[in-house]
Image 1 (cartoon, rainbow, N blue to C red):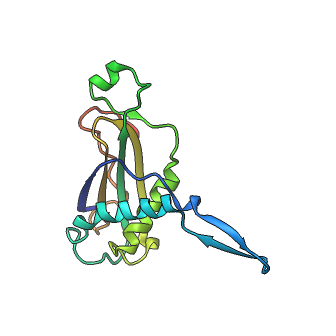
Image 2: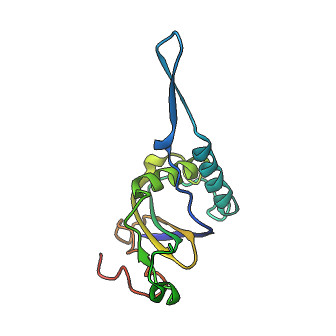
Image 3: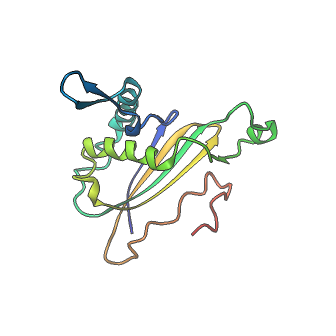
Amino acid sequence: MKFHAKFILPGVPPTATAQQKGAFVIPGTNRIRFYTKKEVRQAENTWHAMLLPHRHESGATIEGPVALGILMVFPYTASLPKRVTAAGRYVPLDKRPDIDNLIKSLLDTMTQMQFWRDDGQLYGATLYKFRGAEPRTEITVWLPDAESSPMPPPPPECDGQGLLEGLF
């Protein structure tokens, strides 16, 4: 696996997803019309704005298979113990938003921005979500090569805290 690019997007990752789109019946036709809700459009625009400075760092549109490593860090909540927040520890986020919805929104935006030609090129991804002191999204892009395994490398260690050691 060959490292291709790494992007660090500061700020809270957007949480509105395509599953939150709206629908209504057109009167007199029994036809359903789907529309993008304001929150979803704002989330898409936020991903776009966060990714735009990094679009050209990755070079031309990627052709061929792609693997991703994604780390999303959300802000601490008031209910977390002070000993955790004061130490700056990462806390696994086991509540909403669901990771499948989070990754769909991000990947759709990256596909629209032509980081790669089609999201069907993605053959592997690891996604972790935590609460932490510095909200951000880290995206690492790998491309397979002939000399190594096509499996993506293990996920990041979250600044040396070793939270993810032993998972792979």
